[in-house]
Image 1 (cartoon, rainbow, N blue to C red):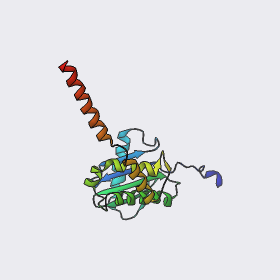
Image 2 (cartoon, rainbow, N blue to C red):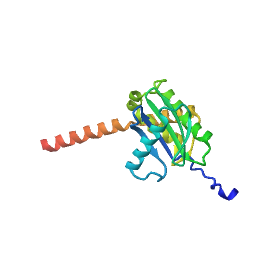
Image 3 (cartoon, rainbow, N blue to C red):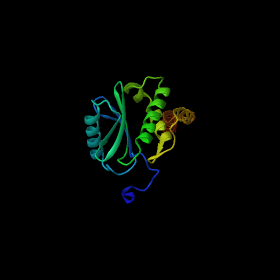
Image 4 (cartoon, one colour):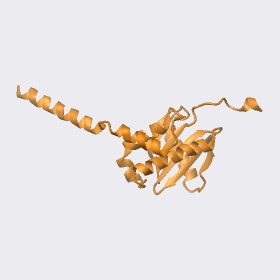
Length: 176
């Protein structure tokens, strides 16, 4: 009996997904090679959406995976682990993700707001899960960590500055 149990592992999360109300991907991060190609990932996402979008439970087994999910307005949040994974751990990750985004977006967790704040989403997921290992499950700690990360110069400003600098250098080179 005990030989059938898998070895304990810190690699708890296999994927974090956010789909819109039509089942299209807004965000997906896979932490292992269960679905190595984008085609396989999208097929899995369509399958998971088809099975869960009309159900009112929060936990499901699909393709030998444990899936915990939550829907809000026009978004579906999924955290996926192996079939042997503790559902409460996966649910803690899901709740942390949703509550962190809810705090950052001022309770406006919907598709448009999420698309406008994608950098916060990326930082949030990275603060909660790293390589499939759960790092944090307290939303306030995640929000604080993301706020500190966002104090760095945003990539868009760095890119705009670099573009402006390159344009000025080109202009000076043409004038010489």
